[in-house]
Image (cartoon, rainbow, N blue to C red):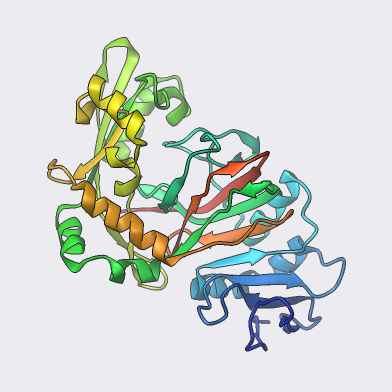
Length: 345
């Protein structure tokens, strides 16, 4: 049966009400921000609910809710391991995918289950869609809280149906017309080597990948690699038809680096020789003020919540973006991705 919500007060402490989700009323639902209705929250309505079996039986209903709300937070279920997390993700989407053309270091802990981006704890990761710099990307992405951080370390999420309309129309038109060029230099000693990014030691495999992905490549001295690719700034959701601001320009651009790091790199490399950078599709520079405005829009619409042990967050990777706050103490968030979408642009 479909998920039938019977609450108007939403998901708030002291105001939760049971919702009939199936014939057994096993699960209740609500929202972190009731008036917004972005990010549905599902909790067991009784002890012992098997999330894997329930999710498998409710797959079609969950798909509809994901498209309607952009994300679903499963909270309070007994999910205690990476294997169980993998089982939940596969109950909803059997087609879990590997992480290729990597932009950040990760470790695989189970088949197609990875650690979240392993950047230093004191660094902020801006809002972004997973792999929006690539020619294909996951339609769905899951996050699992194996160990909540002691301080901060939240994974803010944003409803990208709101983002596009908040960006200055002149900026939108410029990006749509020119698109975005991503330039990456692998093996410069400060970013991923190409062997890790493409998960191979064979240059021929990399070259074939680049050709299929419509990327230009150039082998440099000392076994280094430079790639260039032009991607659209917006995409259309294949099921809802929504036009989404969908690119990594504000992530890859040199202005996203901490000032001290940026100064050191620019003293050594030209802008097109940096480990990664973004330009307009015609090769002209993107104004830092424009990218700062885009980052600001994402922050304006970001929704934040504290991780709880065992939480699973499922996002539609078109409709929702995510980031990471700095944190203190141990933090372990795992990631799985599924339903590969290949762009024709």
